[in-house]
Structures are given as structure tokens and as C-alpha cells.
Image 1: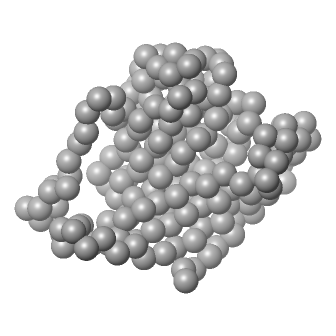
Image 2 (image 1 turned 180 degrees about the vertical axis):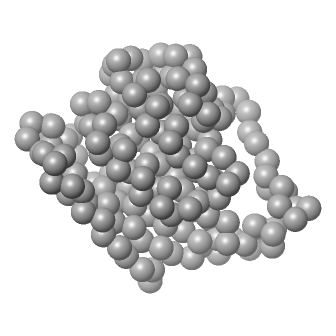
Length: 177
């Protein structure tokens, strides 16, 4: 069992029509999960715009080199900025993620849903993420559907390393992963 913390979103975010559309999209209760996986894990659940909850858990990976023990990896997935996730909520997710002080941040696609108009704003906000070994992204099916090259360029302009048909390795204390 891990520890849980709840961070209320400011009341100024308002809910109105945006939340109605959002709850309609996630009929099962409106939960989006942002997770972190490594030797220690953290997950941040966003529940119908009401709060972010951070849960810390230890994850044991036997083949992981000892130098990587305790590595903190934050993962944010399925942002869908625009219609389903307003700028204020994405900004709050970035602030909360940075407060976790991760070593690596993995962004796993679907930064936008249907519109190129949201690409630059999503990339600019996500570009505020900070991690010791960097922020890395892969694109999702929505990003490819809207414009993969344009999404890639926007993320790279904001210092996010987009991995398309390539990988990266990390070295700590003479060991690599």
C-alpha cells in the first residue's frame, strides 16, 4: 500500500460545459490516470476535474541495474488538450508533476484530440516540465491523425525530445539502461 495525497484544483477553473463534455466522454466516472513507473512509483489521478491525487508506490524490477534504484519516472498520457482538458488543468498537471521531482518524464501521446489549433499551447505548457534526465515523448494515434510532423515540431520547440522510431539510453554510475 502506498501513500495518497490530494491536491484540490482551484475553484476558478470552473466546470460548466467543459466538465459536462468531459464527464460525457468518460462515462465510467471521468478518471484520467497519469502514472509514474520505476523503482518507486507515483500515480496522479485526475477525477472529473475535481482534484489530482498522488499515490506513491515502490515497484521492484529485479533486472534493473543497482545504479538506477530509486529512479523516479513520471508518465503523463492522453492529455487531449482543448475540448477535453482546458489549459488551466494541463498547467496544474505540469505543476504537480514538477513538484514530484522526477528523474525522467515520459509523455505518452494524444496531446490533442481533433484540432491543430491546440498543438502549440499543449507543447508550450508541457515544455515547462523538468526532470534531471529529460522529458521524452512519443505520439499517440490522435497526434498522427491530426498532424504528427506538426505535433513533433511543436514539442521539440519546447525542449521535449520526441522519440519517433528511435530510443535513448541513460547512464548512471557507469551503468546504462
